[in-house]
Length: 439
Image (cartoon, rainbow, N blue to C red; front, side, top):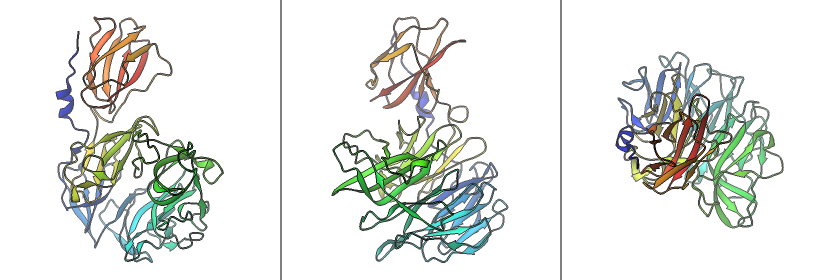
């Protein structure tokens, strides 16, 4: 029997849903503190919501907010131009601390002990510049520059810290000299060491890379460093997303290329912005591009299996999409804003946080054809357990259908939308999950 999947019902619930209210115009960042207090940065201040985004109030007026960060201790920091705003009481009161820079503070992060690091960068008449990295021992303390070893490469783009306190810094290299790109520091930024990035070019591009600019720099819960950038391999351009175990960064050897779009020209991939690692196991990121090529990217499989989402994201300035910023509250609800987009979005999955089934280590069932075409008949064959139940899930964990078991092999229609899907076969004593792709 051909099973018609209830796709109309699934399509009624969008991956991203706008919050109840999103005042204040273009957004520049988002953060959550105290498990449930939501902040959004604006071009002229900060707004706050205490009810999950249903209503907002303006809690800070400023000439411009370029970044937001919520510390592990519950403070909220916002980067401006030449200053950083700090609130330790949920946004009721704010202090303004000077930063010796004429450039915007574009990102703030902290290490395990709670020391804070802020980076500066922006464009002037001569190109992308900055005043490097600033350090403070904690919220409310004075900020000092820490640029030893950076030389003239002070136009910062991204910063991250691993669990051992090592810092990773991506800086702009306008002339692609190979001396910019990635730096690391073992002493809270007092001294920075340049890191060469090499890959296995597979005989198609040179192994040693020169980074021009970076779009993403993140450290995963599995202790790998992820770097996304554009640069040169020899005289040819590359756009890559790469990863390496944190203890190996700075040592000789190759970084692993992480493919996002699975293009034959793998060295010209779509580069991701920072990756956000959420408590439900999903990784979220974004890419800059047109209304069809830009948008959200997410995966439940670690560094591979990236899926794009651009539905329901509406129109953005200049008909393109830019970097997205994410935050998670204490209930596993995810919030997102796009740089200079006006709306605030939320993703909650069906019945709460996304719960994509985990894949079995070994299995007895096979799905074919795999990959399948849109709407094509798909078959499930193998040793079907007694009293088994079969469910079809999309990659966000939403159940789409329960295929009929009266026929052998089990037959159903693949979903209409391209993407990654899962078939879960289970009874009281058996659970098996098979991944298949619709193209």
